[in-house]
Structure formats: structure tokens, C-alpha cells
Image (cartoon, rainbow over all chains, first blue to last red; front, side, top):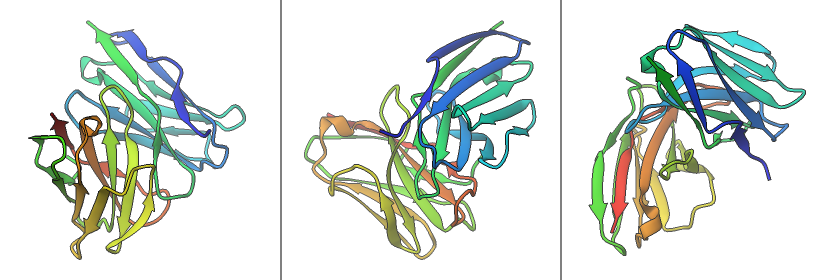
Length: 111
Length: 113
């Protein structure tokens, strides 16, 4: 079936290093992708999005890359900070009414 | 701060009871969706409302129902609660249309005992 998945459930990063979080999707009809950050006990927080007609999009300290050929999405966080510790979800929208989420990657930043 | 507010933040119910969760969407957002997030998992789509009508539904039984009001606020109702309904219930709002940013509230934690 169609699904959105993350390659690794956990990621440990040294403070100041760059983080890369990966996501694989299988629905070739997906046109819109979003990365969310979820801290413990809180709702998902929008980080950045990208449409299928783009390969790369940059925000503040974050970059999303989309490779439609291999159905792969990644989130890069520059100079990772302790406040970046959270669960990160990729979500896809295939031109319908819902977002489909993966299971998430837990990022832990080491001081 | 997303402008999406949910209430209550936490509640405990007994199996078989009914619960109503409420959501106030961000100003100007006429589309509201509800998601269920079990512990350790990603959110699962329940349904979406637009112009006070259900606009799409995920794989949830009919005992999950909803309402949207003229001011775009929304309610999620769950009847005949089961233990597996224990989860974080998230409301998300956006302007109508594909590709618009979807913002989530902080959620309502429901525990069914």
C-alpha cells in the first residue's frame, strides 16, 4: 500500500553539527511534502514544505531536498542546537484532502 | 504559536462513554482536519471539514463523527469509547485548497480506562 516512511527511527547528533533526516515515500502521485517537528507533549510544528515541481527549498537553518526519481525526501538542519531535539515527521499530500505521515525520527542533540 | 487552539488538553474517560473535543482554527482558515496520534506513531487522518461538511474521511468507524460551525471551529465526537481510542487527538487548519500550509494545534490527550 501507499506509505510514507523514515529510514531511521533515531538520530543522535553532536551540538553544532549538521543533521540529515531521511524519508522515503511510495505514492508517486504525491505532489506536496511537509516536514513537521514535534516536541514532547506538543502538536506538530510546521518546519518547511516543498512541492513536487521543486528539488530543493531552503528556510532558516533548514533545507529540504526532494528526489522524485527515487521517491526520497530529506531534511537538513544546519548547526544543530539542543532545541532541535524532537521527533521529526515527513508528511505527503497526493492532491487530496489528507496528509499521510511516517512514523517519525527522534533526534537527540548531544552537548 | 499556530493560532489553532484545542480543548480540553487532557481528559480521562471510561470505556463505553462518549467524548467531545473542540478546536478553534486559525483566523481565515476554513478547512479543519482531525488526526489521531497513538503513542510512538505518526498522526492518522480521521476526517476533514470544509464549509460545514465532511470533505474526506480516513479509516475510522462511524462512531467517530464531527461538526464544523459557521465560524470554522470544529468538534470531534467519539461514541462508545474503547481502550484503543486512547491517543492524542490533533486538529489542523488551513485555507481551502491543495498545497496550503497546514497548522496543527497542541492536541487533546484522551485516556480511556
